[in-house]
Image (tube, rainbow, N blue to C red; front, side):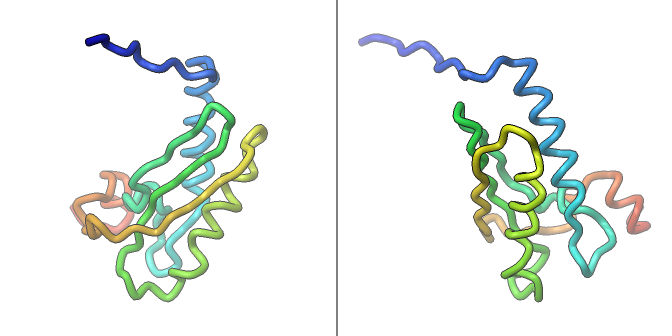
Length: 116
């Protein structure tokens, strides 16, 4: 039995850190139209994966499955991410498991919504 070595990313760690910062920055430009807080701070982003080829895959949810912008919000997220130089593609998947609840919000979002 052989142990496989952890797979190294083709993207240097410093570059990956900078890319992560830019991804978060862009996610924070997308707002839920019913709540005056960005989707990142609301906790709607469940997963962000970046491949060695700089393809981005995002799993996100909505505050409610019947959200009126359900059909539009993934496109808004994709548009925001594609503004980052060097990103080749972006695929946004809507997921509802686990369901979103207010405990997923950051302290910053809770402060903005006077939930403390």
